[in-house]
Structures are given as structure tokens and as C-alpha cells.
Length: 167
Image (tube, rainbow, N blue to C red; front, side, top):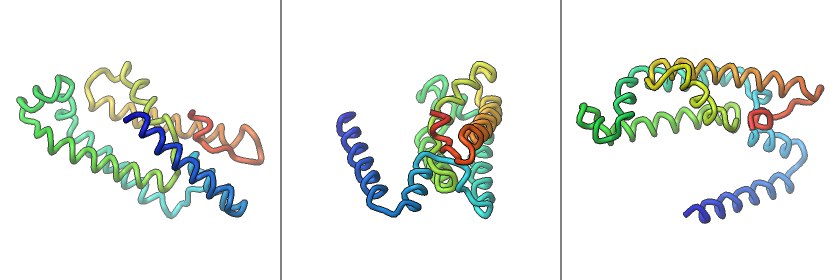
């Protein structure tokens, strides 16, 4: 299964590389920048949509923090505490997928922020999700802004994609 995933990944990477190679230079630069992520091509008219999706995911997480805490003891324990496990899993996946899709459409793929920040925040916040969500939002914003600042100032006058900095 892992090999099949790698094969599909390589296939789509090759297809993307071909499209970038075959296209005109301006479009290729835009595609490469978007696939590596960056705030340089994000437009101000999309900020409302990005803020709305981030707000919805934050509100959902804070509203359900006790249910997420119940999952720390395992799904069986969460279910015995009254958490509708299957519905919670589906709803959380749907909301996270939609918010991620909107934010990626605005700023591109900015790798590793979502993977690193919870691990950096957990020692400060502890195991409970309410403080963890707040700390992760703050740390994620700080990392994104610091990475954007570095991306814009390391090689002036050009701007590096943020994905290069965060990776």
C-alpha cells in the first residue's frame, strides 16, 4: 500500500513537472510558487474566506475540546463517556478537509507547519485540547509570519516560497 502511494505520488509529480516544463515561463513560475506555498501570490480579496475557514475550524475545536480530550483515553473510553465517535470522526474530517482546501487554495501548500506546531505546543499546553488549540494557533501564526518574513528578505528582490523555509 505504501509503494502504491509512492507510485501515485511520483506519477502526479511527473505530470506536474511536465505541465510546468511545457507551459510558458510566467505560468510555470506561478505553478511552482503555488505548489511550494507562499503569501506573495495571495490576494486581499481572499482574506475573508481564509479568515472564515480558520475561524470555523478554531470554533469547532474549542466547542468540542472536551470530546477531543475524551479521545485521549481511546475510542472505547470516549464512546463510554457519551462521545458519538463515528459522527465526531466524520464531522471533524469534513470540517478539517474543507478548511484545509480553502486555505491551500489561498496560499498554496505550506508544508510542515501543521506537523510541527502541535508537537512544539504540547509541552507548554499539556494534554488538554482547549489550551493546545490556542497555543497552536498562536505558534502557527508566528511560524508562518516569521517564515514569510524570511522568504521575502533572504534573497532580495525575489521572494522564496514559504515551503522552502518551513521544510
